[in-house]
Every structure is written in structure tokens, then in C-alpha cells.
Image 1 (tube, rainbow, N blue to C red):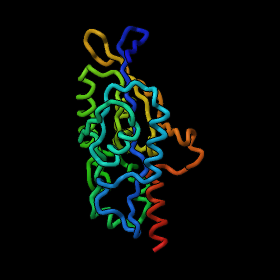
Image 2 (cartoon, rainbow, N blue to C red):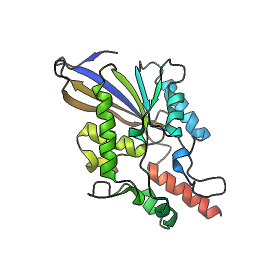
Image 3 (cartoon, rainbow, N blue to C red):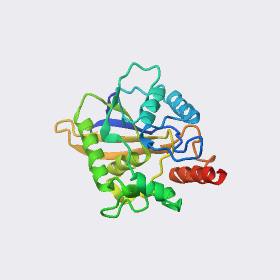
Length: 241
């Protein structure tokens, strides 16, 4: 779908999704050994399906997903029934913490607020990935996609942390606003960017919608932030042991 801004710029759009609900705790109450491979829960599949139905009239002409199973599965459900290839892209895989760090955590506040120091130079996510280095990786992947002019409407399915970086790019704030942005499961964000028709220089970027969840539009059903939800599940599982 071709869009033109008031000043004649080419307006392109990114629909940025977070994957659906997953569980990082197994049936025995243990934290999963490898968070990269967890699948969607039944609720996560329902979330993604509802999101896809709500956006069924959107004319996506490109679809890219983090290569992690939970993101690919979400993309397949959102885009079900469309004749569109979903491209797995490692630029958009989620932050990885140090397993030894996570296993040693006794204060679940460290899980619930893992992103609180993302803006601090040298900060790392749960003793693992550097926020700055992941930001560089994500922006490189995003710039490569934008440099390919064939698409106008992109579906990009990633993760809570990765989405925050893309939104920081749109706002021009980088890591400064990282901790202040929440991303619920199966949410959608809408980002427009305008290119000069002759040079393709980006003239402006606009965040049109943020953290929209079609299954709970105004977050009435949940007051917890996304990482607080994970910490709460861990707390409940540990209490039940």
C-alpha cells in the first residue's frame, strides 16, 4: 500500500509485534534450561490468533521474525491465511542473560526489573548481553531492512527487549527510554517513517501506536508490567514447591 506524506515524502510503515505468551517455568516449577526454545502457551496462541484476526485487512508486503520458535510461531498465527513468506532474522533475537546469574538470583525484583539500568553505559542484561551491543545489532538489522525499497508495509515479530530498541530508534531516544516502555505479549506497535523521494533520506519517524493488545485494549485485565508477570509466575511456582 503506497502512502504519501503531506510534503510528498514516501511514508513506509512497520507493524512491530511481540511474541505471544510463553512460560519460562516447567511443569515441575523449575526455570527452563534454555529460554530460546520455549514455545507459546495455549493462551499465547490465542493471543496471536486474535491479533491476526484484528489486523486481517492490513496489506503486509513483507514479514520478518526473530528466529526464536516463539516469535516464528506468533508470526505464523498472525499472518495465517496470507500468502506471505516469513523470513527468520537473527538480528532480532532477544537478549540473553547468563544462566549462572539467573540460577543464583534469590531476589525476584532482579527479574521483575531486569531492564532498569539499560541506559547505564556498560550495563548488561542479567549478567549476559550488553544493552549497547544488542542495540547496535538490532539497528543494523533494521537499517538493512529499510535499505531494501521493495516493501511499504512490514510485519516485524520480535521480543519485549528488542521492540524497546526499535521504538527507541523511532523516538530518537535510544536506550534512554528503554526501561520506560512496556511490551505485553502479542502486542502491536505502529511506526511510520518518511523518506525523501529523490535521496531516500529519512525525513521523520513517528510512533503511531504503542503496546496495543487487542485482547485487552486499555490493560484493564492486568496491572503488572511484562517482566513483573514473569517474576510473579516464578514466585507462585516456587511457593507451591
